[in-house]
Amino acid sequence: MADTLKIAAAQLNPSMGDLAGNATAMLRARASAAEADLIVTPELSLIGYPPEDLVLKPALHAACMVQLERMAAETAGGGPALLVGTTWATDKGLHNGYALLSEGRVAGVTLKHDLPNYGVFDEKRVFVAGPLPEPVEFKGVRLGLPVCEDMWTPGVCGHLKDRGAELLLVPNGSPYELAKEERRLELARARAAETHLPLLYVNRSGGQDELVFDGGSFAVNPDGALMARLPDWDEAVVTLEWSRAGGFAAGTRQMPDTYEEEIYHAMLVGLRDYVGRNRFPGVVLGLSGGIDSALSAAVAVDALGADRVWCVMLPSRFTSRESLDDAAMCAQLLGVRLDNIPIEPAVTAMEMMLAGAFAGHPRGLAEENAQSRLRMVTLMGLSNKFGHMLLTTGNKSEMSVGYATIYGDMAGGYNVLKDAYKTTVFRLSRWRNAQRPRLGLGPNGAVMPERVITKPPTAELRENQRDDDSLPPYDVLDPILEGLVEEELAAADIVARGVADLETVKRIERLLYVAEYKRRQAPPGVKIGPRNFGRDRRYPITNAFRTGA
Image (cartoon, rainbow, N blue to C red; front, side):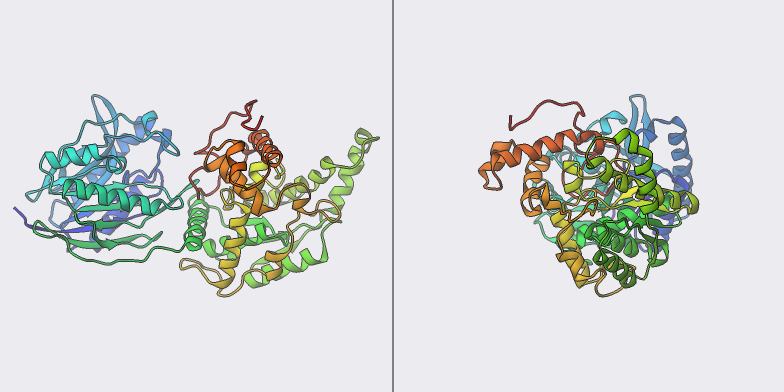
């Protein structure tokens, strides 16, 4: 019976569905921690998380078993055992499982008991809940293996303690959102205190479509002491020492990101993995001279490198000299290619084509939106011709109230600003101009002219247009939207906060609801807050209810 164990936390970035590649990555992690007794990998580390309906394919589970046996065989000659997240079939159905591979075989399996079915999670759709798990014995030590959600409530960990578990090893696929890290640590400390057991929390890193995973794996002892913390966002393999007498010994403790840095890294990682794993050579985007496209371009350069980012200025008759100069300066600061393709010939042709149908009606929104749509036709043409993914640049404030043109500036393959309100865009732009992110591939120093941040926002679809001509200032609009979207407050509750008057809040609520059909057709984008459009917030398109009625 071992009184001590060397346990390696393998904070990995599995690629969805790449079973052979993920298995190889876990074996590589095992080789890098050859001194360890046991390697702990994240939830569903063999498949990727969240797999959604992919796990309904019987062929996927069969392929999992092939790779599981391959990895188990690697443990036959000694060296560290492996804990691997995988599907597992029983007579009850398909489970979210966690397998111990040791001495050339699958030596034990635990099945996830608490299946989350809220927010971005819908595991009850694809998995069957396992029974309350029993400890798994390894080298005479009884391991408690609560899988992700099993730690978030006391039942599973308490049961494992009652059944003789001596420590808790918790594999996770916990997506990033603001302030979530503090919640994870708080819950882990609660479970450790309740059970009087040390706890190791191993989370994945990297991006999967709209979700990003921030890593930040950690170990705590029963007294709540933080004994180790792995870096945010990076892959890492760190070996920790556990003993019956003292729990985890002190190990590496990386500092968490600051507020702006964590959001920026979420965008960077999400775009990097989306572009890379979908095998795009790079991205193309319209660089307008405004703050949204400037920040999007900066994130793209930091994620991919300047040589994989292609910016295009698409001026119309309403584009100011200032915007042309600011776009050129952004491109120069970032070191990216910038092409200038005027859309005026296409705008003139469109106006001539529609002249008969529009006769007798004043110029208005239809003509303005045609410019946005022609820009996207141009950018999509470049994307189709050369293979670059079109990066969309609209922010959450615009997406909320419908101030984004469907089949126009909403078109594209991915959007790093989709869950970032305009006030967040301003804040991140100031931050990026002051410092380079730790994972960034872009330049040191400013990445956009100061004027891009300070000038009044405008779409430049007509003479002297400004966003605040038809919307409240963003420092008023965004708190209204946060109340309506993130908190699901009634209009009267928002008014009571002193944010705005009732008529303003009612108007924004109406705009929010009537734009639902647009958001259903928007590209995916990085989830940042607790209620992103898409996976989190699923509203009916046809909806007559209003809290401000």
